[in-house]
Length: 200
Image (tube, rainbow, N blue to C red; front, side, top):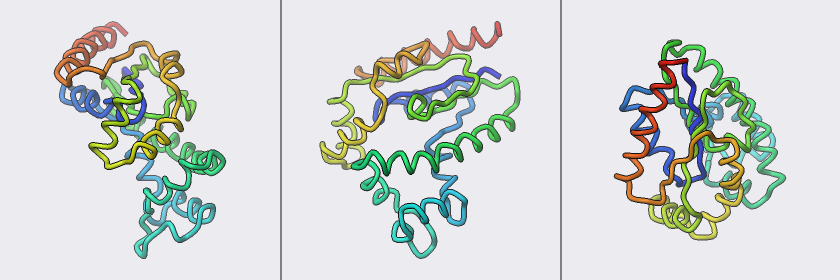
């Protein structure tokens, strides 16, 4: 297996890069989807969140109101750390299960926004971060998700700084350019990673 850690701040362009790489033959494990899975109705994660943050965050079917939870944790560092202490270990365990189920000759992309913050210590062959300036990301969050500038900034501020991600990364993709140029860069990097995997 050739394991790629794909990270980057919110609205930096990770999803766009991951989509291309899966089209080129990679297998993606998406940490955000896993984080949703581990708090689905009836799970250990859901029960822990309910006991820590209150039953009011769940509807009658047991579904978590993620936006309401976000409003709580993105304005209070202590509460965010409490949530991370619940979710991060559950995500790590589930990701290890998923990795064990993947064919061993695969090129696997683990898309994980909080690679630095969650201290993800998987045996990555390479780590790639996708980066764009804060003002560009705030604009994207406003246009694509309807966040106010202050909501967007709060989410960005709660993540690792670009320099911290860069220190963990082997490669940096610049998404402060047109999608076509980003895709060209990402395609070229994928070809380089395929060559590395072939020589592993």
